[in-house]
Image (cartoon, rainbow, N blue to C red; front, side, top):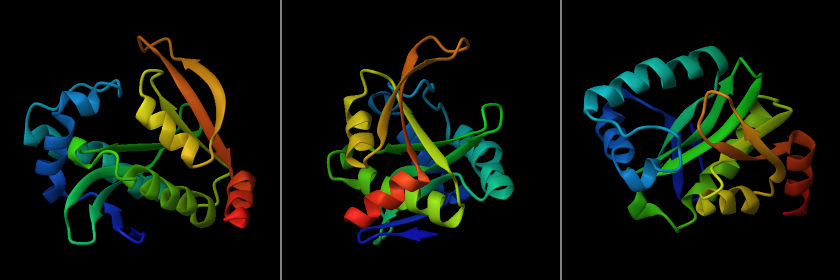
Length: 176
């Protein structure tokens, strides 16, 4: 579990499925993700069991459920390991009603700290579709560096890629 001034980040549990369904069934939320909307709560449960649980079990990282300290579910934020490319990706997704309040940046910064200081990662990437201005602003606020565009042959669109190294994170913390 991770904590900030306003937020709690914890591994997802099956009881999060209705919230995950609500989050991922909103077209405005998923339109820049490359994911399709969830159709049922059962699909959300399957996503938790088959995608979220294994990441934490295998790699001690994954997409954390993010709540306010009063328990209000906001969305998720976390690290995901992609063994085929040997990369760790920072991702975040929040309910539309919670956009513009700094939650994505706050959750992402504590997640970067966890990745670099607890997991001893050397580099963390973040990707966004070029039209996803909100996500790109979050990457910039965190001090991540623009690295270019990535086009996966299996995906229809190119992604903008940002990253941060452990030494860049350490230097950023020294400045704060």
